[in-house]
Image (tube, rainbow, N blue to C red):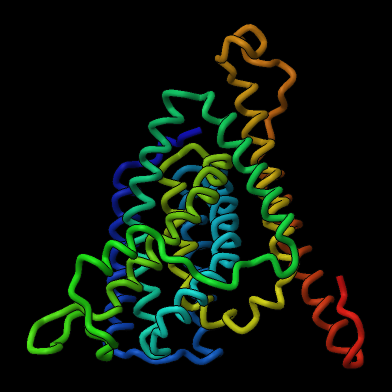
Length: 336
């Protein structure tokens, strides 16, 4: 459901978010560097605190329901983003981005992704408002994605990055220098002004993230129908992604059971969407076009509990597996 939040609150929230993003980008541009583990931890905690503070404001302004929906959507998006960090690592490696410039690349790519996601969210909200049967499609898609993710299992991630059509088009259309020039987007080469490969990386990060949104946006719409909450959950999840990239970059290969946890979350939300579609059914070939009375409504707190247990269990299981591997003598067969 959508919530009647004050328009002034929504506008002020969006202005504050834009201000944070602009300030963050200015800081990264002024002082490009590779953040230490301590710095990354501090900034991850800052962005987590900002998200929880925003949830508190939502509770004060709109009540418990929008706050719970925001936290559930934020946790879902954040967890899916952690899994997507592996692909960002592949992109950085594929384009040989200098470490000192990776913060800026991620920041600009995230801003590009947020702009594209905003259009995706508005379109999704309009479709949902007009065609409630689309929940059947979203639910089936999420369950299919969950099965695909679970089948990949341990070590199922791709090891190579393949450029999408837009990235290839940018390479063909724009005059490009053969290498980087610090943090510059434009530089001088062979007597003319050309773009540096940073432009291509910006596009690669932004558009690749939008591809991930085909999983995460329907998942959040399964938790709330309010486009404002969907968008802000995306913003707060992606804002902390840059620091999480440097914090977890060397640990991602250890979170081997994370795909199973994410698969459980996506499957749960997919089933929840199908149940909601049944409860508001208007398709003539399902129950004669009438809502299905036995379809239960899943409370938001249940969604939060399932998300927390699935992701927490996957993380703990991964850490236990790492410890078991560390204690095994070399040359022994690998654990399943």
